Length: 211
Image (cartoon, rainbow, N blue to C red; front, side, top):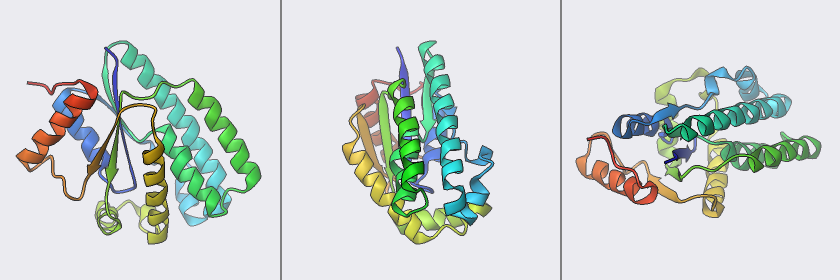
């Protein structure tokens, strides 16, 4: 039976950690966000207006390719967990760049047209997990993990992404969804939190952990 879980959330919310944890708990095949592969990303953080369309289009196409690969492997019976989705690329990151004036109307219309075309042929995950995390914790985690291109990201940028994430997740109805408050949840160290999360996933996705 096809099972795909997607993990959504702002920068520093803990997506990769949860993907690793689900991989070990359920034997799921992980698909991680391709941020280190994007040849435009460092330039984008240095000059968002100049590189926004190039960077977001690269992410959109790469994410579509990942979604298609996930669909193929899931159809063959693999359990899949995905770090960030194509929906967030458009509904959060590209939307913010448009709001901020980094994507003009012409580029935004072209981007939306491409996104909507690609989205129509994709199957949504069986469960969408959204990681909510306060800005103070996000900035602390971003500093700690030390990715050079993230260190200059303004707090206002993270706040804008958070607002768009909340609106997107509230409206998302393509599949069952689960909200996790990651600043208060420690599923690695605390047994109670771990059991609570396992029970929620079993309930929403019909999956049992490896015994």
